[in-house]
Image (cartoon, rainbow, N blue to C red):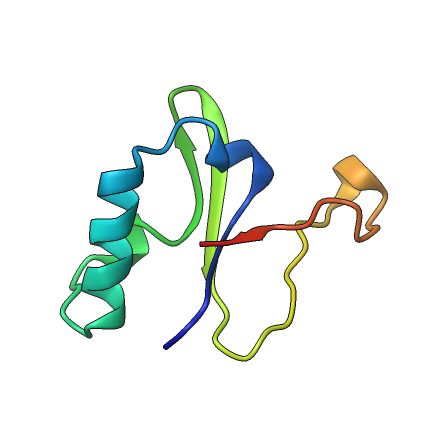
Length: 77
């Protein structure tokens, strides 16, 4: 089974049942709208980041906001 990672920002407000349904749909190969779930999106006025990384040991959110350092780990869900 693949690994799906969620950013720290996004963990706060995502409904766990909805998250489980979306992950199951994607991993079953039946999600025709994965682009609406994965990537960077604004939800409830905050940014949320989700990525499918099946072979990753860890994933970090990096950018100019953290001087391009691996200081913001994403959480496997």
